[in-house]
Image (tube, rainbow, N blue to C red):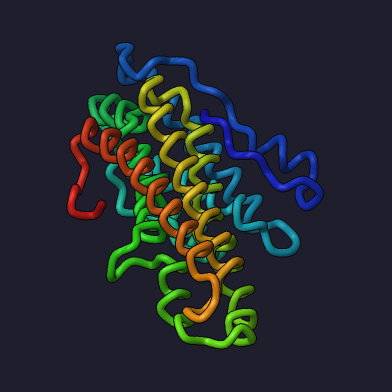
Amino acid sequence: MRHISKITTGTITIALALGLMGCSHTRSNNESIDGSEAKKELAIELKFLQNECERLINKDGKTDDKTFQSYKNDFNLLSASVNSTSKIETQSDSELKESIAQLKRDVDDLTEKEYVQSYKRFNSSKTIYEVTLMNNMHDVIDATKTWEGSNNVSDSFDDKHFHSSEAQIKKDMGSAIDYINTVSKYKIELMQDEIQKHRDSFTKLQLEQLKKATHNFNLSLNDQIKSIQLYKPISGDYNVSRNFRYDSYDKYTNACVYITDFESNLGIAKLDEF
């Protein structure tokens, strides 16, 4: 079983933290595996998800979001690997119960050949990326590109405050920066956790591309924050803020080189999105 991303300390008991660790698989995805071995490996993954589902349902208080996001990705990865229609979207007890029950039925119904195919998909870098990383990656791409239709907060802030007063700029600054930190930068944290969790299923080159892409996107967002923090209306020293916007775009471009190469090699790149 894969390593689960680290849990926020102080909010989860030691027993829960140990339960979330999982077991590290050692078999290479290129190694041959027969139906009985594949069935055993997938059964271990399913049992882990069943146990984790019970913890999420029975835990007192609200589970921190990173714990749920990690479970959601693990569940959806196994589900996609066995071609199940069961999928986790929200942290609802009824959804968790129904989804895990359906997933168990779908896993139990696999033939020996399907167990082998499912196990290979489960360890495939393509499946892992598409299920656990791709949506967040493209959300961050959209948050760091600078043309019309993107969700670049720095550009939106500039459009809104080009002729604003210093007081209005200062008033709106905090919420803009908070959005970058709690939405876009948080998605980068989630991706970094998933990259670390599934590191054994990626090649050395793929790991380098993913790490450099997320690093550069993070730097791009940092420059957006600096641009907003130093923003001046057109009557002030606008150049300082503008230079950080240029820096942000440069880092976005660097990140896109890595992720375009990564997705192209998997055969899933959509070049018009970059």
